[in-house]
Image (cartoon, rainbow, N blue to C red):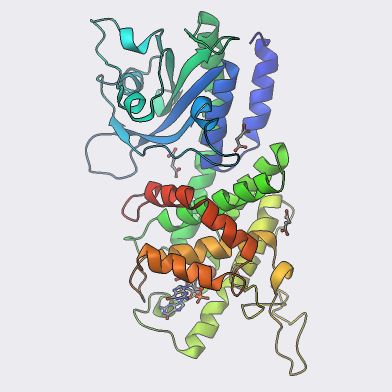
Length: 415
Ligand code: C2E
Ligand code: SIN
Ligand code: SIN
Ligand code: SIN
Ligand code: FE
Ligand code: FE
């Protein structure tokens, strides 16, 4: 690749340093690591130790990328990788790397020396028909504290044949790991602050976790990415919007902090008066982001305010000033008009779909979880009524990725 070290470090620092959402960051880190060394494929794992008292620490896969497999998919389609975790021990390559905090350069995965403590797991190759040859596995660690592991796979020569990773690649990626770890640490702090904010609001019940908001952020991201693909939005513009959309989506219901438990946790149906009170979580949420100097604040405000508007104009809170609650547009009886169609901010239209899909699919204090078939039927029925029909079509186009996101963030787990 022959980039000068400093040039490469500056570029990596500036790209990774601008991303605030941890999931997007993990995806970009893997993509950039692969590009640095011309790797055809790779995986990124994070150390999973959120649940205490469960003994062993594990490595949890967060993203897998494979250009060869990607080329077999339709444009805009995303790979669905298998969700799995590995014990942090010496038996697997990634586990060894994590337990010893050592990089491992393997020229041929099917010819690992007999005396190596670890062995190569070929089940992925068997499953996909892909042939793993060279791998380079290195830790992301901050002052002896392990955050994760990256494995890049099959360095490609000019003819597209796999060749071993070189000594120079080892140096490049060791440097890269320092920058990536710093960016990851910052994003983890942001994520921890968001989760703390959410705990204070919607998730006062400790049996609930950040799973709902992680799913809503994930679904929103899937919908936006396909929308961006369809509309030819790429590069920085797409990454930047995706980043703040994920954060804003996580915070969509943070205004529930101002709703009393008596209403929020009511096991049955709300009275009309209670529901009117509940509706204020949109404007309360918007009020928390009144420092609209930053893009992430202004998009979070937009999402908090508009995620319960409906395409047909019957949603809430409609055309109000979020600070004074004064109607900005009213009918002749003085009732606030709802926003409809394109009047609803784009991000609000995306999160509305993600939020309702998740609410229907999950158990709530006031309802049981619905079967997927019933949920999807409802989503279809609400297209053009409650939801932007173009975005509902996209939702169905990316359903495999939506299901994958759902499986990545089950209710019981804290990831
Ligand atoms: P949530 O539970 O997160 O639900 C979000 C949205 O999902 C709801 O917004 C609604 O659009 C949709 N949704 C949820 N359940 C159903 C359902 O059974 N059928 C259909 N068609 N849509 C459903 P909505 O209605 O504006 O409610 C906002 C929030 O108010 C809810 O967030 C929940 O926290 C609360 N809420 C609404 N209805 C009740 C209720 O009857 N009892 C209680 N305790 N809370 C309620
Ligand atoms: C790419 O930049 O090569 C695709 C990754 C993405 O934009 O999500
Ligand atoms: C946007 O890209 O923010 C606007 C797209 C739309 O309104 O559909
Ligand atoms: C991590 O701990 O690095 C990831 C956790 C998350 O994505 O919430
Ligand atoms: Fe809400
Ligand atoms: Fe919600």
